[in-house]
Image (tube, helix red, strand yellow):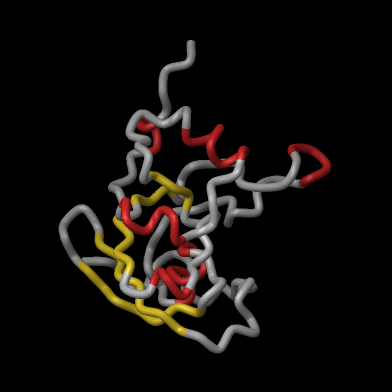
Amino acid sequence: MISRIGRFAGRTFKSRAAFSTKTIKVTYVNVDGDRVTVDADVGQTILEVARKHNIDIYGPCEGIGQDPNDYGEGPCCTECRCFLPLEYLDKVNPINEEEAELLTNMKDSTKNTRLSCQVMLSEECDGITVAIPEWDKESWWVDLK
């Protein structure tokens, strides 16, 4: 079952959609097929919505990465990876260079793989289903040696 009481329960996350009045429905599904549908504000990221509703998506960098003075802005990990339906790819914000580069190092990355911290929801995303993969942190990185 998708945990609605995850390791991030009780934490507050600042949403980019603080002033949005439009809500949409987003369904999260895990590898066991468990589903939960929640309300999301237009302009929020998939990760922000998950955190707001205590849906357990692992994402240690919270989409903000490391200290920008050390590593630059943007994501620095791929732990919050998710899979979007192909028909929704043109309804979310386009993938940026940093995200694309990170995803090239993933064994299971496909054209519908995105980082949930980087995907901003639009009104056109109403009804989207987000697939959350099973996590085995050590097995996902391509052997770059």
